[in-house]
Length: 449
Image 1 (tube, rainbow, N blue to C red):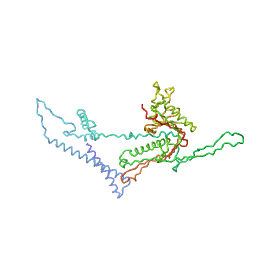
Image 2 (image 1 turned 90 degrees about the vertical axis):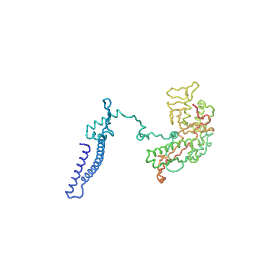
Image 3 (image 1 turned 30 degrees about the vertical axis):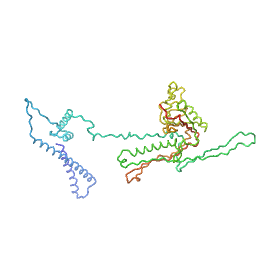
Image 4 (image 1 turned 180 degrees about the horizontal axis):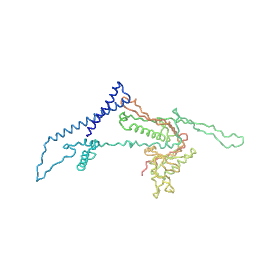
């Protein structure tokens, strides 16, 4: 029995089952089906439709095969001329226009009917393909070799991040309301002195304070994205929003170091009135010449506010300048502690990392931050080195910031979605500005290696 015969047989059986259900309903003089009868009728109808579709396709294929066989029979066999008593003939491939077998029918018969002859023809076809085949490459199938886009490995825009912001020890949540924060700074202290004689008046100086006002600033960014890009692309909106968020943190870090306090900017460390300044002037700078300036920056923090500095902040190129420095014998001045340094200028744990570099100078950790400017000075090629007490870097950020929002309505007429990232923050190094020393000058031009 062929596969088509089996399908037809099953179709007849479905009809018998369906008629039996309906005849039972009619015999009971009912007009409505029970829930079980309704479910069974629906299932039988659905199966009958599927079987009808298969029968139609298989019947059409059988008719086409029969027509092709009839056409081949009508063609007269052309005998090859005899040469020397031998007859040369050509046998058609198993599945070809000249052959009688159908690959599709044989595949069905071998799979569902265990047709041995069909299996033999399929095996013969496999051997023919092994003997006679053409070599082709992916270029022959431009429409079938699909390019793969590794969206999980999509490379976001490189951002400098927020190393200094993360090392600011006093990080606090921004108050829920208001656009200014006010801190009282005692600028005139009381006095004490030795009493010259008994019953003489003791020292008396009236204390006075100055209000330190810290402005709350807004950092924000936006990007218009077409509705088509969001709905037909893969993670495009998330890719954009994540870049906006990284940009927000980088801008915050840049503002902490370089903000001017005007035009909506944060008043950063560099422009805070009262910070200590150290000038390093040299036409041929070396680590040896820089070292006394580092010591000066260190002592100025202690002298100004009677506190100890806690960190160095410098551009990665300045850390590399120190790592590349050698003594007169060619030995590095900055070495890993693993090597047991002797008279080393600075030490580290091995690899120099971005952010917390793992190296220390005069006992203070070095923070490598690419938001330190490299276009300072008359030649716009100088960077700076900061010696800071991180406890006096006060940073407020609104809880949960930055916030990401999508607005459909603003560009509804053009199917545009606007993605916005924003957040509020405030910063000051002005509570004790002397807790910061900044080294600058011609000695900090771009190093050569």
